[in-house]
Amino acid sequence: MPGPVACNPGSGVDQEGNGVTTVDFYRPSSWAEALAIKAELPAAVPIAGGTDVMVELNFDRRRPAALLDLTRVPELAGWSRRDGVVRIGAAVSYARIVAELAELVPGLAKASRTVGSPQIRNRGTVGGNLGSASPAGDAHPPLLAADAVVEVASVRGARRIPVADFFTGVKRSALAPDELVAAVELAVAAGPQEFAKVGTRNAMVIAVCSVALALDPPRRAVGTGIGSAAPTPRRAAEAERFLAGELAARGLWESRAELDPALPARFGELVAAAAAPIDDVRGSAAYRRHALAVLGRRALGWAWQDYRRGA
Ligand SMILES: Cc1cc2nc3c(=O)[nH]c(=O)nc-3n(C[C@H](O)[C@H](O)[C@H](O)COP(=O)(O)OP(=O)(O)OC[C@H]3O[C@@H](n4cnc5c(N)ncnc54)[C@H](O)[C@@H]3O)c2cc1C
Image (cartoon, rainbow, N blue to C red; front, top):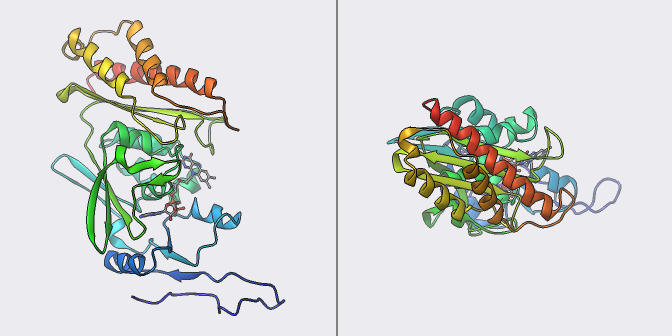
């Protein structure tokens, strides 16, 4: 395993005699090297954009013995498109998703546009959002709605995890200690995709709650994802079944006719019913349920208008 590129001298005291915490800093230049370091030092904390990790270090919530910088790993830094599937490397920033992928994966691009500020979008990555596995992570609802797959890897090999199985609890994921997120894969959008988020202000805000919707006309399918509304991001499965069933039964996929307002309203109610929200500093459970119903209804209204226009 290559050694750290930087580390504190390890004496345990600074020039004034105060105790210091030593942090070894590993900077692999290839994926194989990164996985080898993670295998050797499972407690090493990966750092991509650092927009979550540095906050934790600055507030002294975490004192890792080692940081594993992923910004020099070329295999994580790009995206590609093949056979109708977009593969986004874990270290691709939100800014690039907005600039380069808005046509191919519009739901994820719309969510990326709402993240933080330009500075945060320049540094922050989808791999980091998955690594943090926060119920409020904005990339998660559109990944759920699009049925994305998370590719993780270790020296033992690679695994493909459906994103719905990736989140296992509040800020917990299916990643094993020696694994890293390599990429996320999702189909090129076959129809309109929306993302709607409520925050306490318009920018630099963690979601009070959020909803993503993906319409897939060729498959006559509906995908959803809700954020900040349960211990993990989750799909609203009953809302998906209801909407897909109604669109099929009423011949709406074919006719593209105006929706009876009762349909988006019921869809919104079912989106809210899928949530298990809590009261916290950002909002009450009751407000979240109300807002989810409104966001679900609106997201369907916007997506359907796009579909009627031929999107
Ligand atoms: C001011 C501010 C505003 C923010 N606004 C938003 C917002 O609106 N919406 C939102 O969702 N988030 C927001 N965030 C949180 C943060 O920007 C996102 O979670 C972002 O996606 C983190 O990406 P990163 O590359 O910076 O991750 P990092 O901070 O580098 O890492 C985050 C976590 O993922 C792990 N990790 C990173 N890469 C990998 C990998 N390849 N494999 C395994 N684990 C990995 C790290 O060890 C760490 O636990 C905000 C943060 C700040 C500071």
